[in-house]
Image 1 (cartoon, rainbow, N blue to C red):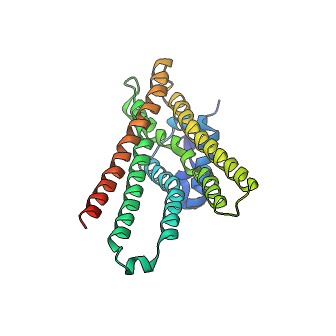
Image 2: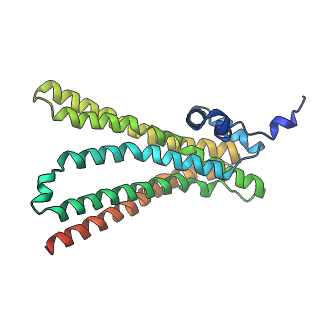
Image 3: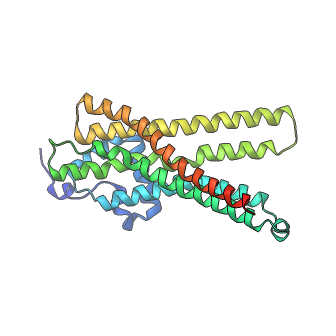
Length: 249
């Protein structure tokens, strides 16, 4: 078989060619490749892989996953915000609510950043050389691609919340319940696909045995729950501080 060594030295990840393709097109092409063709991600082990590129993809995905939630939170905050309330002496309360909102954004960003990196610890088995270990670790971050689709469940849940504010009626209640169920199903699908992609990319990059695969399959849900608890503590600490300040007025 003829071997084209020139093409073997060029990455097939669209994200690596974003200067030519454009960031938007390169990101979503890479996202869809990771989502539906993870075997191609694994084949990049035979080509140069940029760790900095994978980190940029990871950070863009985290922001895309967090942005719909931030927009929803800001919209809820501004909906209840009244300039007259600030003028009548509740400046501290509104300021503290803004701080709490910022703490939610910070804890959410830290949570997603930690979640997207938790699987990488399994991508450097000792039997691989240093170069291939580094490539596998870099490729592991592309497993977070489903997170960028968080606007789907967020949109469904936001629409359900908006429909509840409409005219009272059984039809609106049914629509709201249906949207909540759809949003929950989409959120669960994103988490499951993220978990599955982590395992598929692990197998396709490291060609590890069943033991390492099962270990990571059990580790990921536990680590995600633990990291979620840490992020929740950040928000609870900010909320507790706000309540203490309000009680001292």
